[in-house]
Amino acid sequence: MENVIEVEGLTKMFGNFAAVDHISFTVCKGETFGLLGPNGAGKSTTIKMLTTLLHPTAGSARICGHDVVGERDAVRGCISIVFQDRSIDWELTGKQNLVLHAAMYNMGGREKERRMNEVLDLLELQDKKNVRLVHMPQAVRRRFEVARGFMTSPDVLFLDEPTIGFDIRARMDLWKQIRKAKETEHSTVLLTTHYIEEADFLCDRVAIIDRAKIIAIGTPEELKAVVGQNLLSVQIADGERERGRFMKEATSIGWVHKATEYGNSILLTVESGEGRVSALADFADGHGFSITALDERKPSLEDVFIHFTGESIREAEGSSDMKAKRSMRKAGR
Amino acid sequence: MEKALTVQPKPLIEWQPIYSMWKREILRFFSMRARVFSFIVSPFTWLVFLGIPLSRMMPAGQFHLGMPFFAFIVPGVLGMGLLFGGMNSGVTVLWDKEFGFLKEVMVAPVRRISLIMGRSLGALTVNLLQALITLAVALVAGIWLGFSLNSVGGFLLALVFILLTFFAAVGFGLTLGALIEETEGYMTIVRVIEMPLFFLSGGLLPVSALKGIPILFQVQFLNPLTYGVDGIRGAFSGVYLISFPVDIAVVAACAAVFLTLGAYAFSKMEVG
Image 1 (cartoon, rainbow over the protein chains, first blue to last red):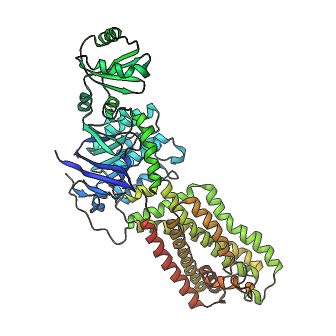
Image 2 (spheres, rainbow over the protein chains, first blue to last red; image 1 turned 45 degrees about the vertical axis):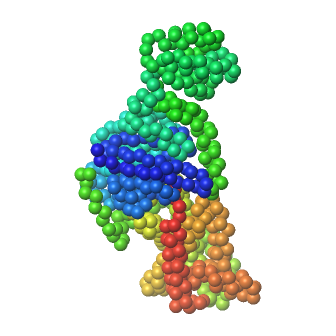
C-alpha cells in the first residue's frame, strides 16, 4: 500500500511545553485514520503542522511525498481541511461559500458546477444552499464545511473534531455522510476526535494520543484485542480501603489478565468464557468482598484508552487539558 | 496517484482568487440591508444636517479659501468617508482571523497578497459608491449653497485623489490591524485616532483656523489626510491650499508605503 501521510518524530514545543512529542505514523492511500485522545492531547496541533499552518519544532512530515515545511505550496495543493472552529463565512450562503472556495483553487466554470452539485448531494444540502449561514444551525454549517472540504477532490482531507458539540442525531447523520462521501471520493481522511464512537464508526485505523504522545496504533479491533476478549467492571463496598487488596487478589485468578483502577470502579481484563460473572461473584464472597455492581461487556476504544493511561478520556481531559492550557499560556502561545 | 501532481508556478496576478475575494466583499456588503442603509444615509448626515446649518452661519471668505462653506466641506466629508472606510478594512481582516475564515483561505494554494488585493478592491468599490452618492447629494444641495463641478477633468482628478487617499487609509488600517491582531484592541485604537485625524485634516475646519496654536497647527501637515482633502478640494475648485504636486506626491507616497507595510505585516501575521 502506498503511504499518503508519513510522519516521523514530529514535535511541537511551545516554550518548554511539548504540545506534540515525537509522534510517528503513516497513513495509506484511501484509509480513514483517526487521532483519538482527550482535548489538549495535541491532536489539533498535529493537524496544524500537517496542513502547513504551524512549523514543527522537530521531526518531519510528508503529505503525498511533499514535505510540509519545504514544499508548503505542493502540500496545500493536495489537501483540504475542515477546522474545529468555524471557518466559513456566515454572512454568505452555503453556495456562495463553495463558489468562493472553488475560486481559491482556480476551479473552472463547468467543473465547479459539477463538483458543487456532487458534494451538495453527498452532504444532503441541496435544499439549503441558498440560505445565509447565519440562519442555519451549527450542524448544517459544519456540513457545508465538510462539503467544501471534499469539493476540490483532495488527496487527503483533514477533519478536526468534525462533530464537536453536535446532538446524537446530527452526529450520526454526519458520520454516515462522511463515510459515503469518502467512499465515493476515494479520499484519504485523517480525523481527530475525542469521541470514542466516532473513531470506532469512521476509522480504519486509530492512533490513541495522550499528553502529546501516541500510545497505541491499530485497527479498532486490534486495539480492543490488546485489552482482552472481555471486560468485567466491578464496584465493591468500602472501595477506598478494599480496592487495592481486591485488585491484587483478583489478578491471581487464572483467567484474569489485568486489573485497572478507574474512577470508583475496577476494570478486569478477562479471557472470554462462560460464567465469568458468577465465578467472580463467588470469588468475592469467598474472599470477604461485597460487590455492589458488576457488569460484563466487550471492550470499547474507551477501555483501550483506560488500559494504556489508567484513566478515561473524560478524566484525562480534566487533568491534562488544564495543564496544557496553563503552560501554553505561560509560553505566550 | 492517478492525478499527476505537477505543481504549477503561481501566476503573478491570481485573477480568480482576487476576483472572488472582491465579490465576497460586495456580497457581504449587500447582504445586510441595515448596512447598506446606513452607508447611504451617512453622507446626508454630514452634508445636510451639519453642512447646511453651518454654511448659513459662515459667510464665504478668505477663511475658506474664498469659497462658500458648503463647497469647502464637501471634500472634507468625502475624505472622512474614505478614512473611516479604509480603516475599516483593517478590522474586517481581523474579523476574518477571529471567525476562522482566514485560516480556511490560508491553506488554499493562494498568495496572501491576492487576498488583500481582492478585499481592498472590494472595499474600494463600496467606498467609491459612497463617495459618488456623497457627491450627488452635495451637487443637489450645492445648487443653493454654491457647490458645483467646474469640469470633467476636475472630476476625474478628484477621483484620482479619492483613490489614492482610500488606498493610503486601507494600507494604514491593514498595518495597524496586523500589528494589533485583535478586533477589540483595533477598534479602540481606531476610535481614538480616526476623529483627530479627521478634525486635523482641514476637512471640516480650515487648516489656517489653527494658525498660531503650536503643535496642533503643525500636526495638520503631518497628517496625510490633509493632502488628500486638499487635493480633492483643489481638483473641484482649482484652489489648492498647499499645491497640486505636493498633494499628489504625498498621497501617492503614503498609499504606496502603507499598502506595502500592510501587505507585509499581514503576510507575517500568525493565523493558527
